[in-house]
Image (cartoon, rainbow, N blue to C red):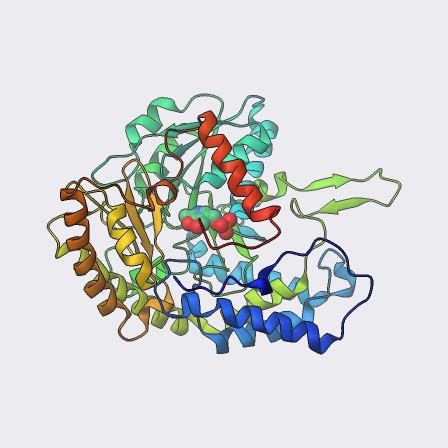
Length: 464
Ligand SMILES: Cc1ncc(COP(=O)(O)O)c(C=O)c1O
């Protein structure tokens, strides 16, 4: 990571070239960039993001994608394949989430562009369903503080008041009493994570389900991260509480194909206990001069390639393949967590699954990040409290990676102790710690600067 080749090849040109270039030349340039980037995560030292990491699997998905990449699935009359792929992806995900337990309503689903896509579609469905069936015009939604920011984004976009429930600092699970006390006649739904991004912990979904049923509100389970791992963890005998449609009161679940579903980026599945929720968010414009318009979700045109690749990943791996991958990931996560636990100066937050976070009362935890970064480790930084986050994916299951983590962590703890004794502050804290102090002017400026760094710069730079 430290000697990542940020060279001229990543310069951002800002004009449409007058003359086109030969395909071979363009492909050679693309290949050169990909080959420069891939080694950064192939080491297995990068948290999350590269969920499969197997180039043969990616090639297989690329081929599946390529066969249908040009197809617009909005035009179903010319692509019956999309109806098959989408229908089967949804059905397989419903199967995984034990929709067979649903007897009184018709379970359905939709394929979206990612975790955020699934979450905002769920919010839209709850808002529209509540408007239609409960006459709610000033909707509110409750999420635990650990709920993904996609819920904040969706509430912002759809004019839904967001109520943020505190979590127990020990377990990191949502305070169910707080949720109960803050549901009112305008609450459209509540949510819990299985598991949350920050700590990899699972909210008490059965308790939330009871509450949702008692109060007549929806309950979304965010399984974007855990949806394709935790069902197999349960099958393998890990102590993962129920979080799927077997829990009465769970009305929707999101599970990301593009994370541990090992599909290409741009694909997630959103499932509903009752067709009435999904159907509430359809958009129709029958009187448009361009023809009667309707779309199943927020997007208009969508590529058939992504749906084909999601389908290909699921049918190629099958339950057996997912279970084997989950087993290796869970075992690696356990080895890495034990390495953290071997240091009395470090504390793991809550009872995590395959993702975990750790902090320290002895020193600023970002000293540990500072020491591990030059060795190629790329963790996610957390705040309130400052913590280091590791989402274990398949690249970490390669031989030697968990052992390297343990060895590098030993050195990093010694380094952190020395730095703390010398009263030094960590180099990477400003970014690893997120934006300090909430949305101050300073924080807003930082974010704007960061966005410009990503979107407007002429020369690609190493990460801040
Ligand atoms: C628990 C959880 N929910 C939702 C999301 C959002 O997913 P996406 O980045 O695909 O929009 C993430 C992303 O990491 C996540 O971990």
